Amino acid sequence: MLDTLDAAAVRRWCASGLAALKRHQGEIDQLNVYPVPDGDTGTNLVLTLTSAQQALAMDLDTLPDSGPTAHGHALRLMAQGALLGARGNSGVILSQILRGFADQVAGVPTVRGRELAAALRSGTAAAYTAVSRPVEGTVLTVVAAAAAAAEGADSDDLPTVAGVAARAAAEALARTPEQLPALARAGVVDAGGRGLCVLLDALVEVLTGERTVRPAPTPRSARPAATVARETGSDEYAYEVQFLLDARAEAVAGLRRALDALGDSLVVVGDGREPEGTWNVHVHVNDVGAAVEAGVAAGRPYRISVTRFADHSESPSGPVVAGRAAVVVATGGGIADLFAAEGATVVPGNPSTGELLDAVRSTGAARVVVLPNDANTEAVASAAAREAHRHGIKVSVVPTRSPVQALAALAVRDGDRRFEDDVIAMAEAAGACRYAEVCHASREALTVAGPCRPGDVLALVEGEVHLIGTDLTDTCAAVVDRMLGGGGEMVTLLAGVDAPAGLTDAVRAHVARRWPFVEVHAYPGGQPFYPLLVGIE
Image (tube, rainbow, N blue to C red; front, side):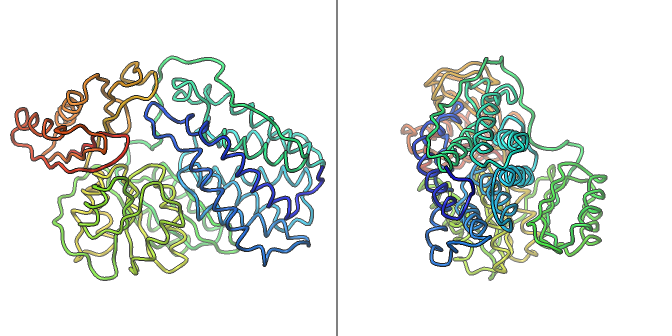
């Protein structure tokens, strides 16, 4: 039984937590399979903590074995390793929980129960600030419950407080389907929250020597289908403005008030340095100039990015100017070849922060655009961009959600434009490209388009199920019809690795009959899970 968390205990917690996540990896992956078989939260958490353990192991020679800050040094190594190896939203959020934890106790001579409670509260705050629009019923809710319970214990007994926090986290996890309708419809609890519970149980095991066997809970009741609110701001605002800012905390407080009066979707996240730190600012506005001026009034803004939501750009393509490069994440050999032909550096799917950072640095360019092609990878790309800034590289992330959007973005690059203007043009082109994915359902589920059964063909438009069918070719043709009904002049088709022979030819022939003035381009994409990806421009 340990009464303090020292450096050796931190190392054992990291190793024990990694082993526990590996035992539960498949289970956690299955929790976020809804209803497409690409759930990878367990895998992402394992890879993230593997990087944390490697960071500890590589710096064992410099890690103090004793002293008031030995545990803080170990926790900071663990957090930094997790950040560089973070994969997906779950990995990025975990790295922020660890960062907040480390920041709180790094200078504390002894970590007992009350110090653990404070560390959990700090980790919670860091996790919430890392998310643009926090959603309850996720890992954020679970870590907040653990922190509140630890504070409520009001004890210096470390094993007691850790046990209380772990139990509260498990109880909060069981309630996540009551807070997030998508979980209730799928009949699962939150995958990231389950992973955090596994790590907290591992901490209890390190402190007490006793393993807690806590199976994932099942939802208390299933809810009927409901509409989940989109995690974006109001459509009243036409521009997204983002920039980095070097400023003091007191100046940032005024900036928050100014930007809050201008728009919505406001997020301002700092790196914790005093007295002047680096802040990541994001807001949706109608007056771009006023937003940038507010940044100038607060400090030194740079890496300014402006995206127009409504305008569609048709800028001509041009050569890539020296000193600039593009890094693209691709899953599928054919897709990778297409991006390489456009002169982009290609990174395999589901990369870590460190792998993306290595790719950015390998280009040798001072200005780099990153196209993540996935919502989870977008968080990793943003983390890599922040790290690249420390190396003097200016990186802008264009938030592409599909390879077809990345192809549209690369097509409008123009080396004669200012880098910032080129990024805006690429973001406009990506945003103007509507995308769809066609796949097979892996489980029975209730979607917004109705119930589906295993094996049904699902057509997802912009990530939402729009059509459910039984024939792959017919469903592919139907989703193209639905998308072209809203306008479009060009269709891009990417055939998956499991696509039957002739699928894209059949869809091309259908478009030629129904939409004779629409141009169609078809390529072998080689992507898993999705027999067909569709882009409409």
